[in-house]
Amino acid sequence: MCWRTSESFLPLRLIVVVTLVLASVLVPAQASARSLVPPKPGIFWGVSDRGTTTEFNEFAEFTGKHPALLQTFHPWGNSVNAAYERWRETATRPILHIATTDDQTLTELITPQQIALGYGDEYLLQMNSFFAERGLLAYIRPLGEPNRCLNAWSAVNCDGSQKGGEHTPGWYKQAFRRIVAIVRGGQSLEGINLTLAEIGLPPLQRPKGPLPTELPEAPVSVIWSPLPGGSPRVKGNFPGNYWPGRRWVDWVGSDFYSEYPVWEDLNRFYAGKQWKGMPVAMTEWAVSGEDDPRWVKQVIAWTVRHPRVRMLVYYTGFGTGNPYDLTLYPRTANTLRQKIRRPSFLETAEYNASLYAPLPPKPRKK
Image (cartoon, rainbow, N blue to C red; front, side):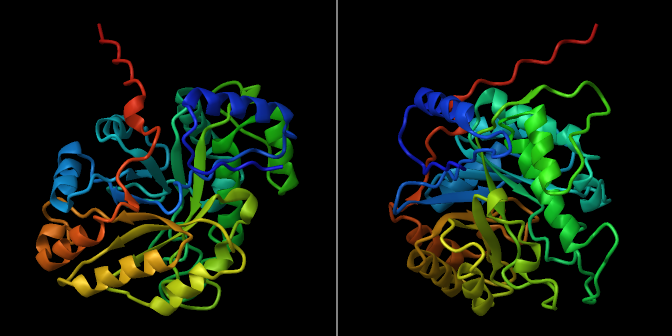
């Protein structure tokens, strides 16, 4: 039994009570999950983070609509404390994208095989604890765009050859499953180890301290998000090659940019049999290179025509020195303002981060 709730208007205390009751009757190996889908026909409007609340506020004012979601991109092992305060200050619900490369040097920090075998469990336990202890509703997007050759966790080189070794589709899927199992939590130590063993993975590891006896249930919803076609578009690099299975996914998502408007791929992705019926997120979309209001009209029209699309996140549409900055494309910006005015594009997510307490101040060094 795997329970999923839509975005309902239940009081938070009631949600917590329901969570605890259901957790008490679930078989340990069957972790619960939320989908956190907005009420029909709502579509969450969102934007990607560039690290400042000022730019976020400028984007909200410029587009005329406050984003309900703020997507933050973080390298493996990075603290989310600063991002948490931005989520609070912007009154958004977070989407946390987890990458395996340093965001400055692009050095690979951990491989998919290493994640699958438990070498990154300390970080995953930290993520479970962070969201569970606060009861912070959030979306977790591990290792997005696995079929983009420039990403370290991809299984394919840009010449179309397979990387092999620690970077295969199989290791990616096992890494994804381990991330989800641990960050979701909601199991005893014995339960999580049984879950991992069931999919052929070693038990929970923690070199820096004792293992927890219980993993609290984190109120997170998991997004799996490949490119709709693949870069490059070669055998072995299509979305289905990286599909970890329904048990580990709450949303399917994809990225779509004006520079690569391959609608055939996007339509094929939406209709994928493996994820039939699941909510769909446009986890990144943006105009770049040239002013293209027509493309924005097409994306919005496509979104409205496809009722499973319930999340639309614009990619860093603000900030100087950014090719996706909407101020560079005035006709595009004007069209976007008009299209997102409709009430179905939601500017608030219930139980967003503004309702949660700030982090305690760090103790002063003596």
